[in-house]
Image (cartoon, rainbow, N blue to C red; front, side, top):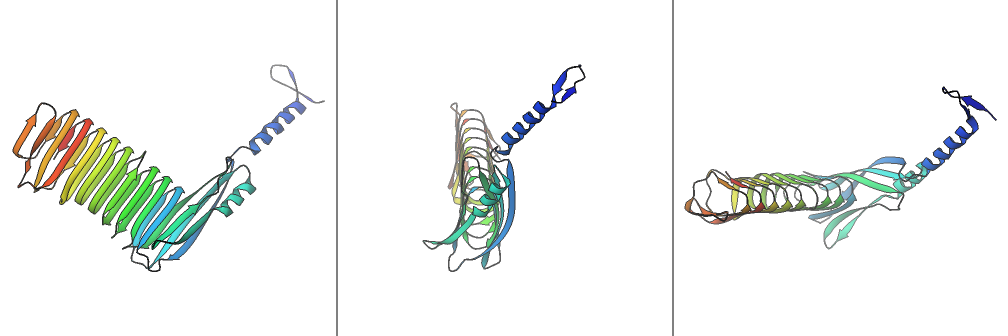
Length: 297
């Protein structure tokens, strides 16, 4: 038996120390997700005759970029975590990108096998034909879409959605994150349960709502369907073009209304409501918040 004397003068059995250290190392070796494996892949997909594209990515970032091209180029950064290095490599080999045509729509899905002690995700960057209609469905991860001339739909449960330089109707939905759209044109629908919504340099109509968060919309040009903004707990800021023809209807339950625009036939009551006409009237502008202020510029 071997002993080591401590600074306090006590003798410690070094064999016991070694046994305890080995015991700890054996425990850590089986900890879930303790080992990591990574790989990058590039995939080229012919779009055939399809003009629409749909992507499912449950876990990982997704970025879609429109380009002047005929095929779809997919850059996939795969990551696997498991209880051992061998298990992580095995999981990495089993992460697949499945694609095919369904109902005339070109579909791509990321398939990641799951076990309680193993996790995997894939960060995607796709370069697609600029004119394709695009839909992205993600559960956990940010979504970015840009430079497209077609309809866009994006849904993320736990991740922000950022859309830029898109001409076409847009529908965005996220549960626990923000929505940001800039330099867009068309009918824009944005929904968020717990996150702010920012819509900048938009031309067209807007229908946006969130349960908890700020809504800010800056319009370069307003479409015939007007603007509808609603939030339960948060401010609303709407910036309009210099010349606009619209019918204004603002309602605030607990907050104030600030209006910097001249109104015709305006009507303000004490219950937090303002109605009036901008220019010659026409497209509706409806702004609603339960707890927050409304600012019209």
